[in-house]
Length: 560
Image (cartoon, rainbow, N blue to C red; front, side, top):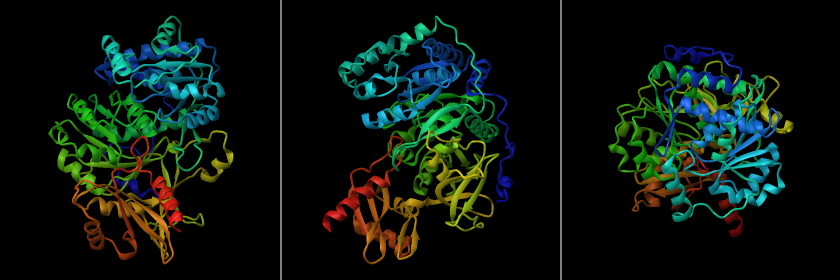
């Protein structure tokens, strides 16, 4: 496919990037810690770490890991929300020559056991709030060293109070017993007595085993090489840098760092740019989140559609000072037009959509930061990135037609860890990764995701894409959230079912049907409408259509 999108690149953004300036993420970290030593790097719960402090703490943790006798490439699992201990442990592990395995702290014991065993992790750093889960399965894993962190570890005197409240007043730490576990601060103290030994880590070494969500079956670990991550960092930096300028950026990091979007777009890209990540530990506490936002002159915020929607429905949010805000980027799920328009109305700034996958480190496309309004696209392919749209026969389809989005570039993973068959299903011999997303490309090169292939609903032979229906319904007054699935139907093969969470209690099914009749052709309109108080979501707020579909199918079978 001709790279027609290059003509739409903002001034200063190159068509190609180089990613060999540094041979590893650890090497980039050392350079940034030197260049930005006095700048704030991370802020959380009232405590700020400068780049120099982060460097000192990460070196100590890396030295402690090395003192355990771990071989280069050993896997180190991190199971924490957004707290300061996360970047300390992550950069320490990477600098010491190890592979980071990011773990969702909300995992069940079964899910945790699978990921630890599949990755072969020998070390786990875990927040004490979740240690009881680890206790259930640790004996059945290869874990040799357990490091237990507490929320207040790096908060100084305040940390003692935080830990007391969390443990004894809020009772957020279930009882656990982990033999020979070491406290995080003790590991840092011990590591400070050792010297971090330089390790020969190269571009083709694995940096992260980044597990896919597991919502489509058993979770698989994407092997993200240092080359993949460094390339994506360079792409994001090249895309953002000319627009953001040389001043230090303050980026609001509400999505968890263990998620690939936040990991690269916030943590690692702003490592290179010398920005400060404001870590939000519990973004579900919208009231507390907005209070934290009021304390910062933030210039960048990233998130998912549901997060932006929740912020907009908090009446204190509109009172914040948005004069410093330069960029708002949504990803992880489709940004709905109603949310984007409301965001611009409240903040005065455009909500820009980007697109990526765990398997692509993650950024594939992004809208230019100089856009003046939401355009409904996921933007343009990043520098050094190729895309093709392919039909069911595997052949490329022309512009204007929908096809599966396939991606090739230096950010595309090596493959799935110990899963050659699964790798072969998505990664072709030509280097193109099949994303599973159906897309179109317009004559200017802007890409639009139609929907997931597996989520498409086939009504009487016509394709219905849930994203489109959801986007229309979200604009209906009184709707807070919605989700669309397809269910078997004896007349049309499949039909649309709509789930709605009300914002206005007076909203009726008749209101929604009238709205759909005015905005959707007949076969796209929902046959069934169900009101819910909430919708099932992933840990980052992405609505789980599959969970809704499984539940609805089970109910349908019971009736039959």
